Image 1 (cartoon, one colour):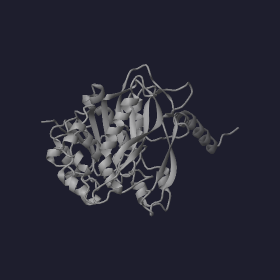
Image 2 (tube, one colour):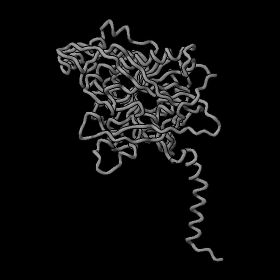
Image 3 (tube, helix red, strand yellow):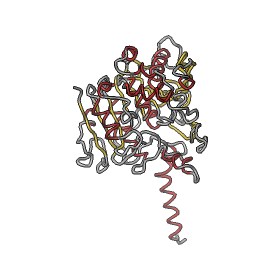
Image 4 (cartoon, one colour):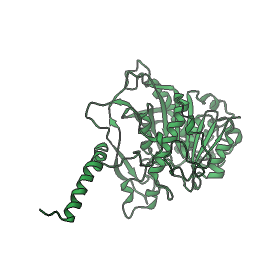
Length: 436
């Protein structure tokens, strides 16, 4: 029988699918690419770690908190503040079970009629309610704080990746600051750092050996790293010692009818000084907001003394770059710190890639630009973030010998960076300043 050209092409196509495509589909549980998967040019340390990953949802109540949104003439009542968190951790899965989870998310913003809430789902590489690894001792804790507005599953590419490398990762839904319950800004200004401190204490209790909780004996809260994005960066820097300025208190009072509640988070305040937590050993701040608005000054930034890794876009039009993120980096004189800059990027240097739901015609473009960067592939940003966060937290939370990945030429165009595939380290800058 004479084989036609079309038949030969068809045969070659099926062979290609079997050899190249099928293994990828098998790995992804039916999807060729999930958030956090490695692109062909992903840097070395972005690869997932040795552990399988479990995920669970916890709910906490922080009792007796200031209800700033119901403040009248500077006086606010108290309320019990609910907080939902997502926890990723090293796990043991039954043979044959895949790391695959469905996350429920929404687009839109609850307080914006022009952008109504639209539910959608996306897949992740973790197993819901999986059994935690119990025979390898304690894993360092990493707490993740999202932007305004955002959610606890905004950075799953990073949270899952870190858990696979031997961390217990806890991401917070900051009440009154999520897509689902967005409320006026004063709640975010007041509660960000307080939420982080409260959750750290809750995880410490659950992690006690006799707690009978799934976290019992597996989480080392004494070795904690903080990761914050935008308003999350605003919060985690404050937790780590960067006290807000007096101008910040005035800014807050002007929004709340004269409330002085933010004063307890300012440098020089005795209450604030007592809350700077020695359990925090490292901070990663993606596009932290506030410097351009005078939320910090040089005196307040001197209180930041833990190693800090800043990440920014050179064209950030939300937090600002030269007078915003870079000014925080330069002003934090008592911290050993780095600043990774994505050249020509704006503010979205941290979140997951745009979901397919955001590609629907007719949606407000900001549903797409809540995730996307105009000059960068967000998946590429995710891989680079995985690489550098792995390196930085590995050094400071696990004492791993990863220094070569930070000992780089400032300009990535000048010399291929260690850990990056040939010709792939372009459009980046890494600055380093030692503590004084």
